[in-house]
Image 1 (cartoon, chains in turn green, blue):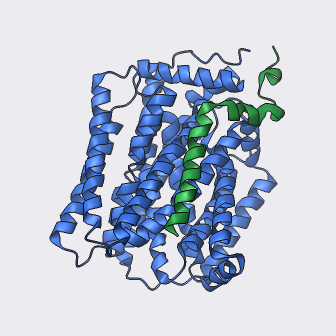
Image 2: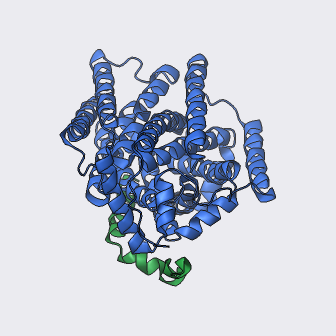
Image 3: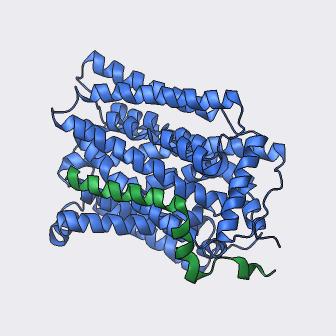
Length: 41
Length: 429
C-alpha cells in the first residue's frame, strides 16, 4: 500500500480532528477561559 | 509499510535512558520557565498586563522560529509536519490556550504576587496526570509503587497549593485576593488541559521543535486579538512605544520561556505528561528564588506568611519529586504504544515514523540541514534583540544584581548540560 494514500488528506484534515472527541476538551476549556478573562477585566 | 503498527517493544536499556533524559529535561524546564516569569514584575511599572503579555509573546514568536531553525533548519520542520499534518491544528489550539492562560497569570500576579500565584497555577500538573491516565494510557499497568508515588506526590502538591492560597489572603488587598487566586487556578486548568495537544503530538511522532513552531501562531494570534480588543489598537500602540525601554526585558522573558518550554516538550515526549508536567513545575522553586532573592518579594511580611509560602512551596516540590521518581516501566510503556497505535490509526500516520519518534531516533537520517533562509531567520531575530537591547534601560525596581547573576549562571549550566544530553541521546529528535 502506498503510504501517501493512507495519510490524512488536507481536505479531510479538519473534519478528522473535529471527529476526535479529545479535541473538544481543550476547545471548551479555551472558550471558558476567554469568558473568565472578560470577567477579570 | 504498515501505517499503524508501532508495537515493537523498546529495548529496556533504551527506555531507561530516555526516561532519565526526560527527567533531566523536566528539571531544566523548571529552571527556565521559572526564570521567564521574572520580567512580569515589570507590570508594576505602569504597563497594562495585556500589553506585557503581548510583548512577551512577540519575543516567544521570534524565538520559536529561530531556535528550531538554528538546531535543525526549517526544512526539517516542514518534513516533519508532512508526516502528521493534523498536528498543526492541535498545535495552534494549544498556542491559543497558552496565551489565555498567560494573560490570566498576569492578573493573578497583580492581585496576589508572584511567589503565591506561581504555585497555584502549577496545580496544572494534577490535570496533566488526569488527562495522561484517562486519554493516553499513562500509569496503566504501572504497579502500586508508581501509583503511590504519583498520587502521593499529587496530594503533596495540592497541600502545598492550599497553604499558599491561605497565605495569599494576608498578602493582597481584600477583595482582590480571591480573584487573583481564581485567576491563577484558571491558568492552571488551561495549562493542564493544554497538555492534551502536547501528548497527542508526541505520541504520534512529531518533533517538539516542529510542534512549537506552529504553536506560536495560535499564541500570537490570540494575544493580538485580546490586546487589541481590550486595550484598543491606538492606545496599545502608544503603550508599546512608551514602553520601548523595557521591550527588551519582556521579549527576553519570552525567549527564556521558549527555552524552558522546549525542555518541557521533550520531557512530555519522553516521560509523558503525568511525570513531565510535575517535573517542569519545579519552576515554582525557581520563581521563588527569583522573587525572594532578586526582587526582595515578601520583605516585611510576617513570619507566618513566610512559613506558609516556603512550607507550601517545599511541599509542592517534594510532591513533584515523588512523581518524577515513579518512572514508567516496560509494561506501562507498552500501554503508551497502544495509545500511539490508536492515534496513528485515527490519523493514518506511518507506523515506522511513530516508532522512531518514541525511541528518540530520526525517521529519515540525515534529512535536515540549515539553509540560507535559516541563517537569515536567526540573524534577523538576533538583530531585533540587539536593537531592543540598545534601547533598553534597567527598570526602576529593587533588584539584587549579584543574586540575579548567580541564578542566571545556574540556569545556563542546566541549559548546557541538558542540551548536550539531548543532542547525544536523540539528536533533538
